[in-house]
Image (tube, rainbow, N blue to C red; front, side, top):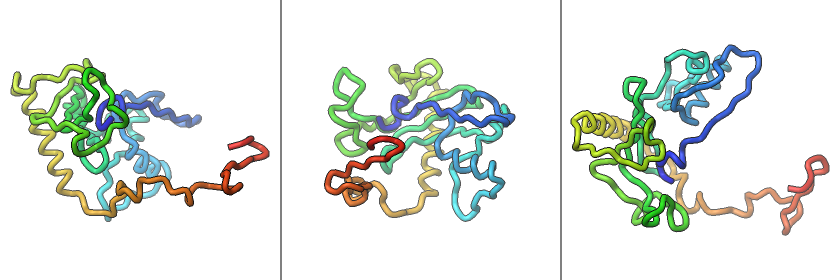
Length: 204
């Protein structure tokens, strides 16, 4: 689903009795926030020899307002397809530079949603959605209809360019050889059937 809300908006539930953490966070966070959160809980300093994009969720869990993201970028493969922009900690906007090429008249891809080439649609200007009033991303806002909307696009475009400028080349984790199924890495205790039986947990 690329950066569409239907593919990235999921709830997270954590149980930790005996803490003073707030029961619910109604705020956009990311899986990358788990690392700095666990590091703070463990009393371990965050490494300073690299950029850490996540933010500790401890302030949010305690009902405070600190350590919030203003912009969250949403990747599809190696490319940024969309971003969530929280304006003044209140209004939540969604910007799409690229979206999957859905089957006409539907909101799904023919087989699977890919991230590149003829499988996607590029938007210039980007699509803009008001997530509070349109979480299904059904009604894009006409960006040119109001300077306020154009300003949002300019801010997020600039942030995306700055984000890209800080990236470093690393081995491609999304290459074909890293993506295909490797039978020799599959746990197997009854070759060639690879059907393992646990006396306590049944068959898996």
